[in-house]
Image (cartoon, protein in one colour):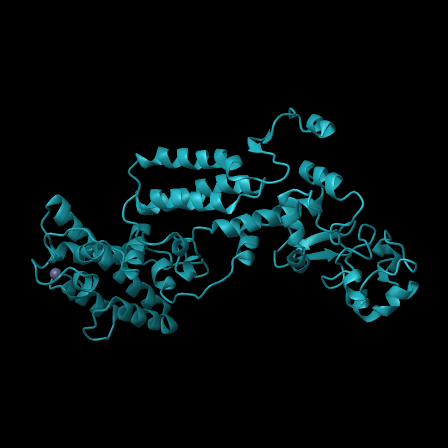
Length: 451
Ligand SMILES: [Zn+2]
């Protein structure tokens, strides 16, 4: 430890020893070791609380800043579940301003294609951080990697060593990931000098030990490199009995001419280097895709409109009917736009109401929607989704009209209730027309949907 405390220029002391502000815990990171992480998250959130941020702005801050903090920690220690739960709770309270939590965290922390808002899931992030550590370890050139290799891999090869109780939690977790790592990593063979013939998984993501059962060391020593089967960039499987056994498979394995020595590459990433975004996507366990994602999240519409319809689809806009349903005392359940012509449900407010149905008729006519007087949001969405298969341009203007109509009707309703401003159909329709004009520009369809 003394040697390492010198190299890392840290003082010996009581655990948790701190390095770069993080506890360098030897064995297990407990809840209390992560107080620093929780404090950082909490103070950021408290600092933002006083600012007038929109829902979209709050999501963005969580997505960028809070996740950067959590990520930084996760790359250093294995953050316990309890701490992850606490971060989710803090973020949820911040997002919904400590009030009525309308959409659950697990629902939001999904890709937009799956009905979320594109916040990354902390558990998956923790897993990706471990992959990143595993990558640093096998690349071997960082100080941390050298320290770990020196400490844990003195006599044994990473790919086959047993899991010792004295190892740190992080290292044990990396070892447990080896079956997945074997699949995701590819050993690129150039000269075979730095690849262990027996233990490194160079043969179609397997190693020889997996294939043979256990090495026959009297044939080839345990430390022999793969270069024993290579001459002048060609396989010489016949050089050794083990090569003959697997000759066909070995000769199917490509010997690369680029580079000077063997290297690891991530499969599925363009230059084979670890990329956070790509590895996250590979790691995320995909759920069912929601059809409406493309209606909501395709570019060309303001974020506030996307989020408004997102809440509407989830039926989480706080209409008077919904407020009453979740136990808030509502004196008057009637719709303000038509002067009490019906209970203010989502369907009434946006489509059935004498006020908004005029707005909606305008949209229908302009978008060429033929579904009659249908007034259910899900049915209308379905109708728009079907256009997408036929005509991209019509789909785009139809979805912009829907998003814009819902947003302006909701705004009109709020301005009337909270600011006492009079309502105006022509005002809403004019705003809508302007939106289609300005937002309906052709969009780059290769861009993935997102906030
Ligand atoms: Zn009404």
